[in-house]
Image 1: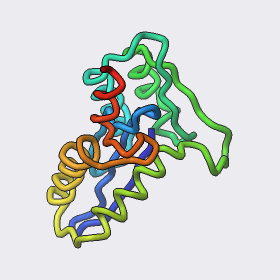
Image 2: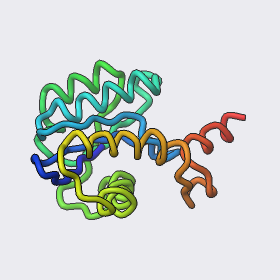
Image 3: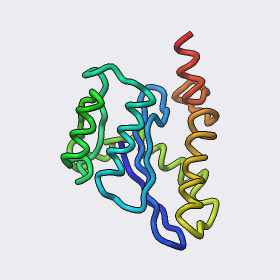
Image 4: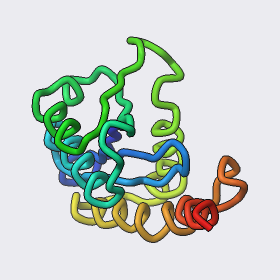
Length: 156
């Protein structure tokens, strides 16, 4: 679980994502104009609705940001049956799956355009996740398959 921010002509847009470390699929995401705990709590809720993880068997890893230490985030994790995990402070390898996702998003989408208004960027982020990254973007980690194709092939 991690957050990135990107500027537009009308202010910053924040994207919080929860990524499945096994398939690299973005299971839950949330877009907002703020960094409050609701941003990450909403991403957890989406992931729980979409992925239906087995209770007490799935770990949601994050850093030590105030959003992740909030009552709301902890309550949302417990409500979804997820176990919380945080790496050590200052660990450069902590949350590398999310960092790699954001690096690709930056290179493949965010740096390609100037965003005049928040709504433009939010729509592009949605489109980037739901119509490009999850269904079509191939990963060497996934034997050259997209996250959705990797999950489908593994279930067969």
